[in-house]
Length: 137
Image 1: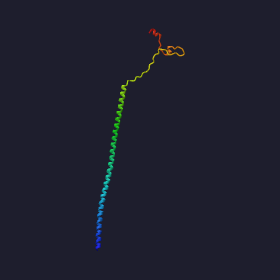
Image 2 (image 1 turned 90 degrees about the vertical axis):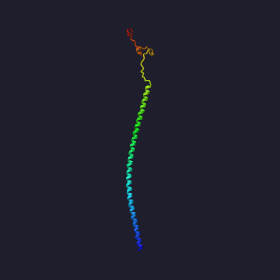
Image 3 (image 1 turned 180 degrees about the horizontal axis):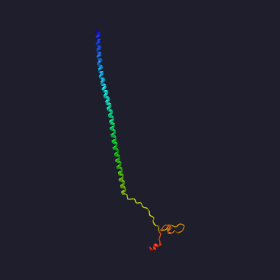
Image 4 (image 1 turned 30 degrees about the horizontal axis):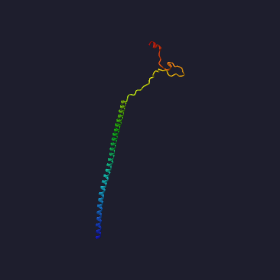
């Protein structure tokens, strides 16, 4: 009977150990479920954070681009203004260009004669004198 009692006691010890192991496993399972839940919450929070940082980054880039375009526009305006002022000053300093149109001058000498025949005043385009105007005029 001593062997039977000893087997009984060992069986009870093993049963107790199995109960303790089972309780610990159940506790661990509860901890694992809580950890999984927290991990899921953290994952969702990190995704929301990533979306919000992307939105903030886009807004900042838009603002930077806007300021860059304003600066470029202002620079272009100033450049055009300086070019216009330089052109105005250059035009103000230079003497005005006058367009001279040559006027035909009256010939005082007849052109050289060709072929030996004399030209009349009307033929060579010289001044014509009206004899009546000279006499009465």
